Every structure is written in structure tokens, then in C-alpha cells.
Image 1 (spheres, one colour):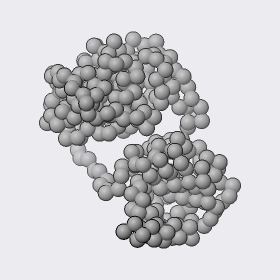
Image 2 (cartoon, rainbow, N blue to C red):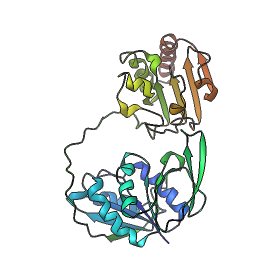
Image 3 (cartoon, helix red, strand yellow):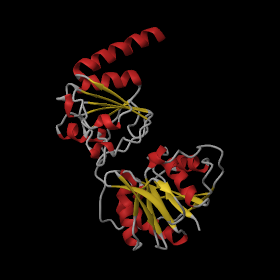
Amino acid sequence: MAVLLIAEHNNSNLKVYTLNAITAASEIDKEVHVLVAGNKCENVVKEVTSVSLVKKVLHSESPDYENFLAENLSPLIVKLAERYTHIISSANTFGKNFMPRVAALLDTSQISDIIKVESSDVFVRPIYAGNALATVKSKDKKKCITIRPTSFDPAPSSGGSAQVEKAESVAAPNISKFIKREETKSERPELGTARVVISGGRGMESADNFKLITAIADKLNAAVGASRAAVDAGYISNDHQVGQTGKVVVPDLYIAVGISGAIQHLAGMKESKIIVAINKDGEAPIFSTADYGLEADLFKALPEFLEELNKLNTIQK
């Protein structure tokens, strides 16, 4: 038995969530093989071979794989799946793009967003917006699984010496075409992997008021998040959304500002190590989840918080 994990990368560098998925894969079986499919992605192959938990790297090169279209990538994965019992990817936009297609082609039931491995065929995944956990036993001969990256520690990125095997590309079906990619670039940490996250909700009242959030984020070297209500209101773009229909984050510190605490939002952040809530409504549900709560007007509390951070920075300098 061996596990095939699909590496997420940008043809130059390995994405950090792949390391978390490798840890999960190693809990299923110690024989972890990683597929690196892309175009001119030799540097990514070198990175993966150094990961200590990886036994073999499958390297497949083709211009058809450059933009990771599900229609192009899936036939390759299905072909390679003949040698494996488990096909694994991260439960993010990368894995969610192609894994359902792979599962359908293999005629197997996908097990999504697992947070724990009980055995090679028993897994734990959240349901009902994280309010319950389901223990799932799969009887399928081939198992297609997506991993919630934040539930597993990243595998050590050094110390490995995996062998590299060339995997022949599979002809693309040419039923879809890549047009363009628009990426939001920021000097702040990535939301999904940041150690500190500060999020704003409907209580911010406007996009302009989100400057209060971003100013504090810059001082704390934090990522900026938001509730769905704030995103739907147009205060901030949807790539900042935290929650059931957004990103799941598990930072060391999560600061929720003007967020009521709907279960959909809690599903994306309640596993944070320390949660701080700032809200003028003392009955807001967020306070029942928070480790520390401040019942205050955010438009007074945030400037005072920023002032104290400025003093601290001055002292440290």
C-alpha cells in the first residue's frame, strides 16, 4: 500500500500547505509518494525530495499542466492511481478544483476536509459548520481524500532524500482553456498560514473604516481577515473571508473586531489558540468562543490599541 499526494506549487516554489498534507499522508501510510506536475518545475521537485517524510517524487512535465486545469491534470492522476490505494490533496482551492473529478473518474466517494487520521480507512471530518465531527470509514478500494491543512503540522522541509521518477504526461482533452490569473499581492502574511490574524465584520460599517484593521495588522505583522457579512457588504475582497465558505485559519492569535460570531464564521476560526473579541454588544455570540473579550465601541478601542502599539514600537526601537 502506498499514498499518492498531489503537490501544490506555482512551478517555482512548493506551497506550504503541501507540507501539512504530507504529514497527514504519512499517518495513513509511511510510503508517501508526491506527484509534482507542472511546466519547468524542476526547482519544486528538488524541494519535495528534501522533505523527510517523502519516499518518492513523481515528476511530470507538460505545458498542459502549467496552470493546473482540472480537465488536464485529472487524466494524469487517474492513470497513476492504478498503483496507489489513497489519492490525497489539500482541501483548498487547489485540491477542490480537481479532486472531485478524479474521484468521479475512479468511481469512488471522496472524503473531504479530514482533520484526523484514525487508520488507513477511518477518518474524522467536521460537519454542520464544525459543530459536530463525523468519523467516516471508507470501504472503497481507492480512496480520494482532501486534508484540512491547518489540522496537521507541516512536515520537516529538510533531511529527506527521496528518489525521483519520471511520469509520462497524458494527452490533455482540450475541453477547457486557461485565460488569465489575477492574484492579490500583499506584503502581509498569507491569511491561511499567518500566526496572527485580525478580522473585521459588519460592525466596521464601511470599507474606509477597514483602514483601522490594516493599520493594526501592519504593526502586528498580521494577516487581515473578514466575516462574510463584511465581504458581502463590499468592505473588503472575498479572498479575506474567514469561515465556512471562506478560509479556515488556526493562528496563535485571532482578533475579531465587530464580528457577531455566526456559526459559519466560527467554523473558520474557532480552533485558533487564543481568540480576542471586540464588540459593543455584550450579548454577541463571539464572546462565548473568545478567550478574551472587550465590550467596547471599536471606533474608540482600535485607535487606542494602535496608540499603545505605537508606544511599544517606540520603546523597542
